[in-house]
Image (cartoon, rainbow, N blue to C red; front, side):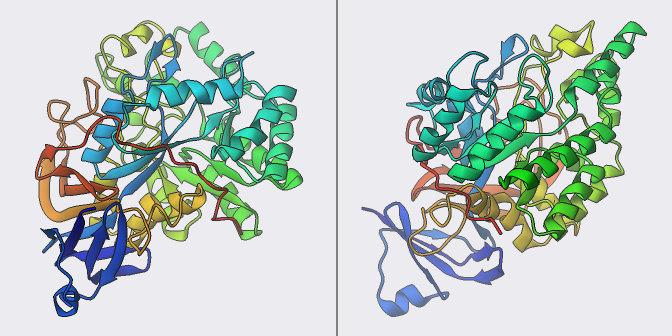
Length: 466
C-alpha cells in the first residue's frame, strides 16, 4: 500500500483552519500531524505532495444528483461516468443519487437498476436515496429492506401530479414507516395540484414563454407545502429533510420547526444563491436554460438563504444536478414552457461557488466545509468515513488554491451538457489536486481517475438527529 504525506497546507474543518500535515496509508488517513512532525518522527512516505499556500479540504459530498434520469420525455445527459468525473474536477469526491421508482413498479427494482447504471462507470464513491413514487403496501415493506442495504433515505414529492406526486395520506404512511425503521424522509415541497391550476390559467391566456415557469410557481406554495410536510412529520415522528429550498418563506418554516427542537432540516442549491428569476426572462428562448424546480426566485431571496446557511437553519448545499442540453432537450418546450425539462447542470461548480460565498463574507471558511462535506456526511450516515480529515477516515482530500482564478464556460467545463448557467463568470479559487480514497484522480489540470473505481457506500441512519 502506498503512503502519502501532504505537507505545508492549511487543513480546514468545521472547527476552523490550521496548518497541519496529513499522512495517508493506502486508502485512509492515518494521522494529522503538526507541520514538520513527520520528519521529527522519522516517517518516510512513498509520495509527498506539497500543499503550500493551499487549503486541504475533506472531499466535497453532493447529496442531491440525478445521473441518467428519465424526465419529461428525455434523460439527464450526465451518466455516472461523465457526471462523477465532472464532480471530481470540482472537488466533489462522493455523490448520493436518486433511483426512481416507476408508478406500479418496485422500489427494490429501481435501486437495482441504478446499481447497474453506476457499476463500472462511477469515478468516485456514490450512495443512493430512493424516490418513492408509488406508496403502497409493497413499497412500504421494501423500505425496510433497503435500509438494511444502506439506502436509508426516501424522497417524496408534493409536486408533479400524475408523475411523482404523493397525496397527504401516502406521505403520512411513508413517514410512519420511516419513523419505525429510522430512515430519513426527503421532501420536494411545492403544492403541485394548486400550481397546476395556475399553470392552466397561464396557458389559457397564451403565456408559453420560459419566464412563466417561474411566475406560475409562487413562493407561497413552496412555503405552504413545507409547513404541511413539517406538521405531518411532527405527527409521525419521522426525520424530515427538505431538498432545494429556494425562498426565505420556506426557510422561516424550517427555522420555526428547528427552534421547537424538531428533526427538520433544509438544503439549498447554488442556483438559488447566485441566479434569479430575471434569468428565466432572457430573450431568444435562452431562459429555458434556467428552468428548474423550484423556480429561480427574485434576487432579494438570496440574502435570506445565505442567512439561513449562517444560522444552520439551512444545513446543506447540494446541486440538484440534473442537466439537459439546450439543443435538443430544452427545445422540447419551445412553444410551451410546461414541456421544458426541469433541471440545471451544476455538479462541477458547487465548491467554487461556495468559496465565492467565503470571499464575499457570506459564510466562513469553516462553514464552507461544514455545509459541503461534514454535515452531508453526518446527515446521511457516512461520517466519519466521509466528510472529515481524521485518522481512519477515507482519504478523500482536495487541495484548493484560494488565489487561483478561472473563467467558467461550456467550452471548458467537464459536464456533458452544451451550456453553462455561469457562462463567463470569473471565480477566485480553484481545485488543484483531488484524492479519492488515497488515489490521485485529478492533479494540475489532468484527470487521472478511472471509470469503475468508485464504490457504493452502504450508508447508516442519519447521525445528525437531535
